[in-house]
Image 1 (cartoon, helix red, strand yellow):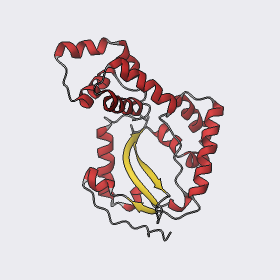
Image 2: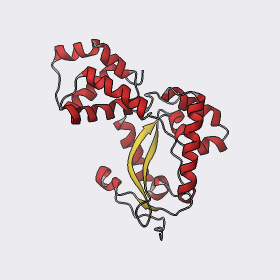
Image 3: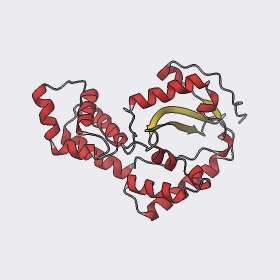
Image 4: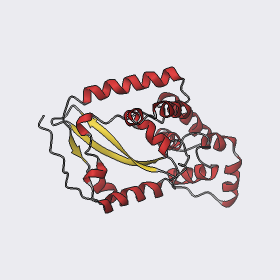
Length: 233
């Protein structure tokens, strides 16, 4: 399972802001919908929960499960995220002092209960790694590489997001197999996603990007003086 039914129950209570009574908490664990939700990636059911509450004003298990199934089919949880070559060697880890990067890793790991937020598993040598989520705003001038969050990924999921590094390090087949297993994709679907990701990467790599890590101030209270020079256009 991607997470336990107990974790699904805790997520329901957190999203709805409604602690369950003792008898309802026990009944929740026996619901087949709860077990089905637990088998899905955490990131999928989290997003399905928030969108369901926003749309319906409540979170019924059956409606939540339906939304999660659709979410996984239309927006698979594990995606290849190729960083433009013009942004290589200038990531969050390189921009932060070691002690601040340690704060980021600890925050991400504790938030995820030291389990992968995509597949729910843990790595064999260390449980999870801190992964940066970026948004690329190419309609702005200068173009902006904006940090939008940190998540915890097991080494296998983390490797799949950085498919370029997996390729040069000799682990492409392993990373592609994991991508297919998590998303329920065929080898052909994985190859198509890789080709699409490479096309986007090639376009983005033609430009310089200004680094925006203001998310850290709002989320963790970490103020950063960015070392990377701002893009000129």
